[in-house]
Length: 200
Image 1 (tube, helix red, strand yellow):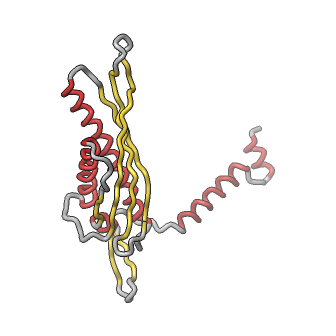
Image 2 (cartoon, one colour):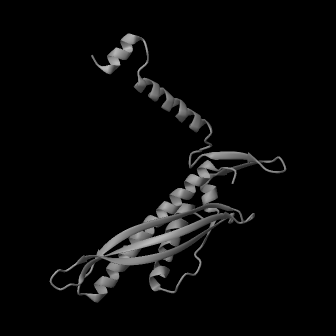
Image 3 (cartoon, one colour):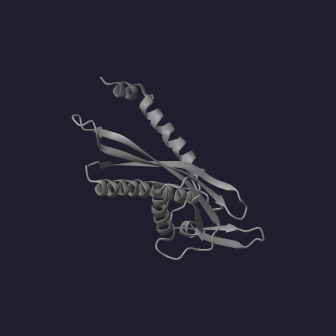
């Protein structure tokens, strides 16, 4: 006889049933306090003068002004910042025109290169790994209040050969791939923030 059969014959609910019920109740309580809205839905709030204000997450995203503070003068950082800027502008505006800025997004990035493969006989690297680390701060321009902070990183590898130009091109491609992943992650996290904070 199984444990479930013994519990059913005794007329008492099994521990598994009780735990499952408690999990459902806890989930319902958590969802009841969440103000999540669809990314393409609308939200209506009241302003200080009692007027209704309707806004969408895409409107909020399109109102973000990008700022990449100076950090070093390396060509790699310049390339990474440019890739991230292009990716985020397109993601925020969805290919359209930006709206008057209401939010400021500051992004500070650094980039590291590490050997991931070594030729045994020649003792020279055969592959490198590029890691892009970015810290970001989203703030309200009018109030200067910080709304969201975070860090994001991504890595991409490239093969190293005896061809100098090919190595430079491969390294640049790895930087671009990593920067695009970081930009996509930042975009998703900001969209999620606005989806749960319609009043900001």
